[in-house]
Image (cartoon, helix red, strand yellow):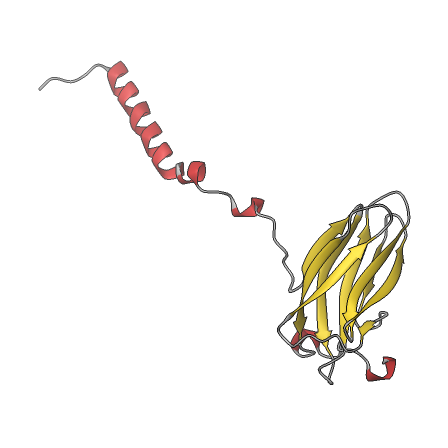
Length: 165
């Protein structure tokens, strides 16, 4: 029986180890990393107008089924204050609401203890999508298709307050 020299054995061991390593770790070379895929982790939608981000935008239907309350967080990452114009339809007519957001601050609407943005006669059904247009200054605006959800589960008590109508 012939034996190979030690150098040949070492080289064969290195080749086998490299093949084993490449075979077990090769998936990472062809599979995209899920952590690099951007997505909205909430139920709402997101958008950006200039330096102002609109996050987790959701419309919560009131008990009457006609009025909705808009849940939205506005984040101004810029160095200047911004007055964001939100536009939606109420009874088939455009309705505007202006919200001032200071530079470097976040402003939330619609949650418990926060100001509500109430849209009467929104004309959207539960489970539908409501168009919301946002714009400020000379920046191009963005139209979001906002999901309309019921005021139950985690949104219990967040529907439009009937007194506000």
